[in-house]
Amino acid sequence: MTKIALVLYPFGVGAVAVNLFFAGLIASWMGLPIIPPAWSVIGGVILGVPVTWIFARHIRTLMDRADDGGHDINS
View 1 (cartoon, rainbow, N blue to C red):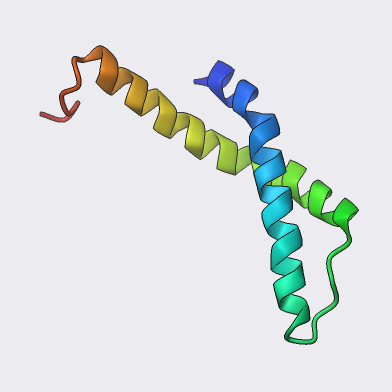
View 2 (tube, rainbow, N blue to C red):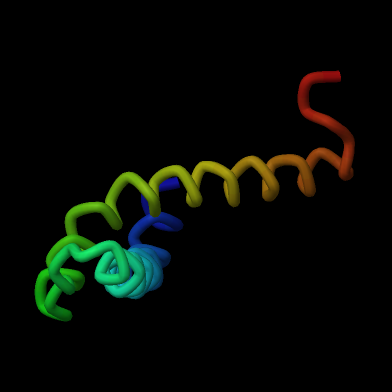
């Protein structure tokens, strides 16, 4: 699962950074300051770790399920 997480990490960082930036734009409608793009990228680097780890676990589960013949692992 670690290899999957390492491969997916750049995509996780990008996704989190974009979402943080757009959340900052939406928050500006409520009078909050806009998050600078650099802060969004830094937040993406930090928050991308747990997000990518969770997504990699999900992908690993799907791969295990496919190797099992498509049946539910718990049954």
